[in-house]
Image (tube, rainbow, N blue to C red; front, side):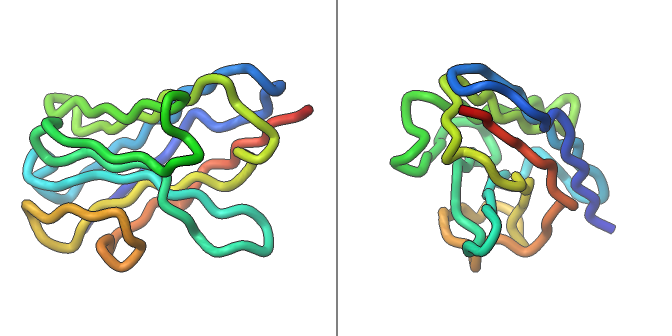
Length: 125
């Protein structure tokens, strides 16, 4: 079965950096787009970034453009989210996700079917 395991979250001061990782298993990783979403307390889950199966295309939420970078290593079945210049408003649980079918791509919550357990990111001011 599909498994997505996030790591790398933690507490960081504003302006700092974190690198999230997501180890995937149970599916043909190189054929699936991968995404990151986040959810702050009392808010809905929101799109952060996505990368296509071939790493040729990526999209970002406006709020993170220029600060976050999504990447993937198909040899290691792992997707990463490098987060720089972190702000207190980035504080949330960050979830790794993938689509239900191969060769699909999107930025909406409904485009994704499988989710990790999440990793907490807290940015102090």
